[in-house]
Length: 248
Length: 248
DNA sequence: CGGGCTCTTGATACGCCTCAATGCCCGTGG
DNA sequence: CCACGGGCATTGAGGCGTATCAAGAGCCCG
Image (cartoon, rainbow over all chains, first blue to last red):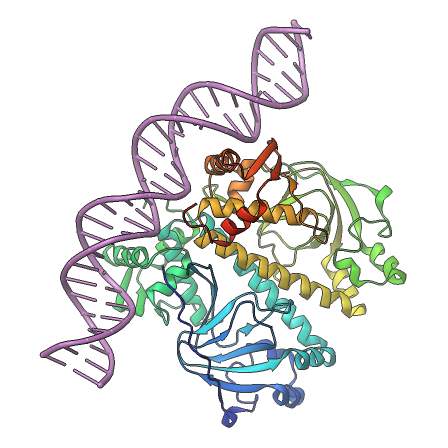
């Protein structure tokens, strides 16, 4: 079981990257709902920041004062039980929008798992902007629906899939996440630790490690490094992840 | 393992209940975003229907042509694996809005578990209505955010809670669902079978049954009937559900 | 070259699943 | 009114998959 390390949050202001124009996530994030000529208004209310690894910048239960948009790096979203059991509900990379809680408090915590750049919007200001640009609200609704579908898929994984099916599903989703619009990748990077993979899949570190070893021994994947994996038999993994290979 | 029974869908038109004015879900559903004076427009595009028990009216992967609003009864939302493993992602009662998929196909299936009344909106028509009434879109976004939070809570349950914690969480959520705005109920009804509870909690029928028997024997609950339960020790259940009673 | 980390691998334990039998409820028909 | 049958729920015995506990290996960095 992994206990969340909670370090003091020291956000470093970074006004050298304040323009939304050259934001890497510009076209893929919710900001794509804003026309180029109106971008200045979005830029005006956004505060860009840089966080180092292992920074908790959203804590479950705290007043939800801001929305965040990741522009570089990866964060984990998670919930904790009092005894330290952790469930990671998702990993958010560039373009991902955080803080979609309608309630007054955050429903989950968020922590960087590598250096991250993000931009922050205060709730009242973004709300005002939504009023001016209805397309922004439509885009947020789309985003929420997509996350809902992802969450349902994850419930199927957590509730009904075996350890091997979970790891296979995870590897494939990682491969697709790297190149969202391009061809499916055969090689992928894992910015998270085994413990984080385990907490995401509802397993233990040891089980994740064992399954990966088994996949490697069976020739379905190749371990380039502990955080680099090549999928040598993608079709087989897809079958396993979909629940078609009960025995194998 | 429970296999979904797929019966042919025979929707019965029911124009005797066509007015939104006296709809039981009027004030609690997304329709509350519409003013009374504009209700006629909503009523115009809604088609009211009655479905008997065990009707599949949304099938995962099919073209998402409609949205639904439950006005009476309960439905289960679920996903299936090829070999029949089922994960129920939620139960929807009066006021619940279905079909929030932004994609062209439904991400899950839906089946009535008791007689149900619902109203149906075609996607293009509701989209047009959203354009006329921005408050409707705002309301849908709120709904989606709430469901997202619920889904994350369920992921924590499926990934990290023990069987007893899952059942306790379920009983409490049922008690609250019955009276959303009122005082917490001590007595609750379970319209679903043990199999459906199991498929919702990521357990088996037998485990659900055993845990309920154990709770009863320990005096934490009273079984009035197989589908009626009284919570005799709510505080204890809440502690267990929250993960505070590791040993007990 | 040592310290601390994560990852891997092995031996064992345990919680939940599987398989199987029995009980309960209720509708149906003699 | 009671016998019968089917579905669902309960209960028991045993097995399996994953967790737990423990040790060692690889790696980074000082």
